[in-house]
Image (cartoon, rainbow over all chains, first blue to last red; front, side, top):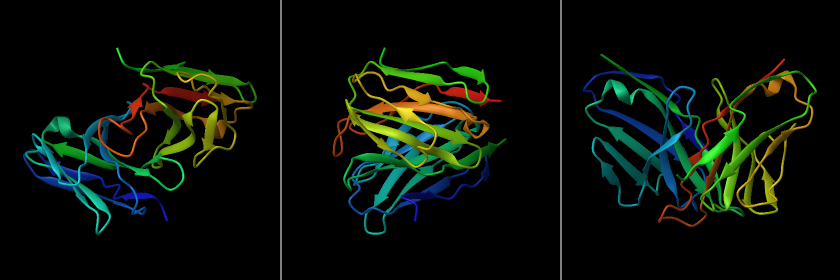
Length: 111
Length: 117
């Protein structure tokens, strides 16, 4: 079983739509959770850290559900510029504090 | 400026010719890691390092070596490159910690596109 799993998509949504991605993780001891954004052939960049209480940054909302071991990302009022791949990242406290990536969810926002 | 620097950014080489991709960070991060990215497979971890002289295999270490003699540098070595190592490579670094205060937030280099003929 993979440490972190994501629906690869693609998600094709019209401008202005609300879209949500989920990511499940296998290690219940994980404590750090992140969403990264990656544009084509560029390096991933941090979009948001995900906190236990949930957090919001403009049109983006991240949630953590420890009981079901998943994190989510909600994007409201999608813009064309939101088109990218969204990666979830989880740390693993089993032995080493390594970081694990999901395979990413591809989002295309259509005019 | 805080950054992770990879070199070369682009390289075309031939099978069997040893090469090194350098990675350097100026943020005094303990953790450094190498990934390769191939279409449809996402980011796959090659090797990582928790600190100087501490390295561990990731998911796809075969055909690669690393070293961590200094905190800032984490070179990736391909002793005898093969065509299946043609890929986009990323180096990344972060502070280590349980959570919060920037711990475990990765900063990536711009990537190195390697082609092995």
